[in-house]
Amino acid sequence: MLEVRKLNKSFGALNVTKDVSLTLAKGERRVVLGPNGAGKTTLFNLVAGTLSPDSGEILVDGAPVTSFTADKRARLGMSRSYQKNNLFEDLTIRENLTLAAMIAQGRTRSLIRPQHAAPEVVECVDRVAAQVSLDRILDKPVRGASYGDRRRLEIGLALATRPKILLLDEPTSGVGPDMIEAFPRLLNDLPRDLTMLIIEHDFDLGFDIADRVTVLNYGEVVFEGDPDQTRASPVVKEIYLGDWEDGPA
Ligand SMILES: Nc1ncnc2c1ncn2[C@@H]1O[C@H](COP(=O)(O)OP(=O)(O)O)[C@@H](O)[C@H]1O
Ligand SMILES: [Mg+2]
Image 1 (tube, rainbow, N blue to C red):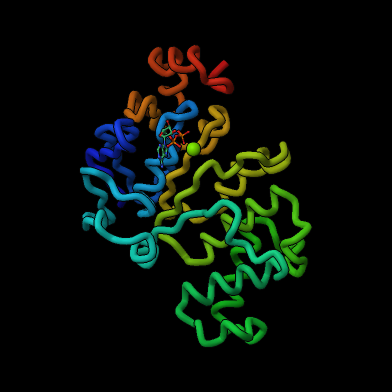
Image 2: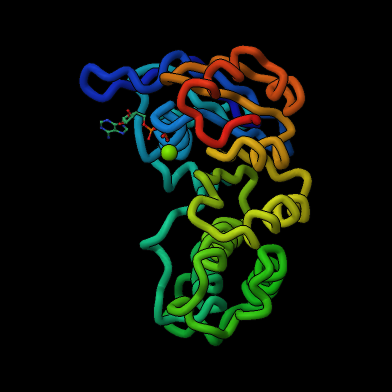
């Protein structure tokens, strides 16, 4: 479904992504773990298409997308959550989701009148709102929403495009314990055929939500396995003993 082959990326002399390869099966939830500076966000941006690799390939369903823009990848069903900046603060949560669904469904002519959304758009918004537990505050403006609810909305905006592949970069960073606790359940309730690549910093949360884990250190894949294998790995323990503050106890 999603394949990354020998990706390399440098910023000047700094080699941030080194021969990274990953293969995700359809419906797989892959978590990429690693300490700060390991190159997780860079990998995420390479996959999403906001950065171009120096070498290597990215394939979706066997077809190369490496030269495609982020928009073109999105049209092929790859959707990423954005952090901040893309929420319309003065609009309600419903209106934000409606706009995302309208754009994804190509119904841009009704953008100026989101209250006249097509039934397919309304259905999509209701479904997504329930999936990310925002149905309780759908008609409240984004301004004033808690940090956790903003993160739910960011995931909701990605889901409103009806993706095949969902990319999340540290979806719970900065949120309170309520959202951290609710997050694995939120993911569990999403369709099982949705493939996910999730960048995480928190070890325990990563293990909770992953089918498979990839561990990055200094830009390299140093381990890949299921959560139990990862927890038990001496290589992973050693990295943790270095500077991974919330790694495996
Ligand atoms: N645009 C950039 N220019 C120069 N260096 C960068 C850039 N983006 C990231 N880096 C460097 O690449 C390394 C990996 O960063 P990043 O991918 O953000 O790691 P992580 O998300 O795992 O914390 C860091 O040393 C960071 O300073
Ligand atoms: Mg990062």
